[in-house]
Length: 132
Ligand code: AMP
Image (tube, rainbow, N blue to C red):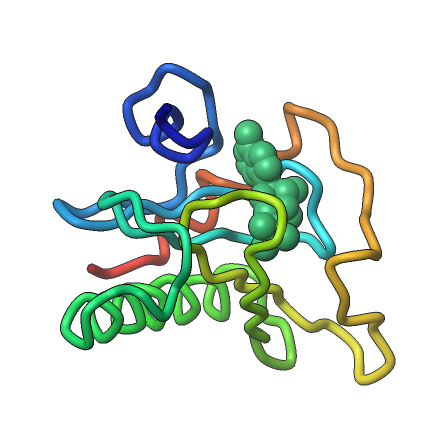
């Protein structure tokens, strides 16, 4: 069965798109740990990040770097942090989480609340700053 992220890539489930190329997709995490929390995924459905080939992992990393640079420009955090966990959704993904203060709780367990309108506006703001 297709993963929820494959369904998002195929537009069977809605998402707040941040960036897309032929092999990758980036979208806002629906339960953000911070404003601009973004997931970068390969379109190829592989559960475990480190089961990607070296080339695929490198390409996903380079895609994530471009998305992170866009987050930095759009939202001006101190920097953008990275978490890889993958215990909830069996489709490899890299969490990009902007860090706004030195004491920000940097954890997937800590969520903020944003409504759909804010998420849509945020995705558009970020996408304008990403150069693929
Ligand atoms: P994990 O697999 O633990 O690394 O985390 C999976 C992440 O996917 C969580 O942060 C969820 O909030 C996020 N997530 C799950 N379903 C969706 C969805 N439909 N749209 C956006 N993000 C999602």
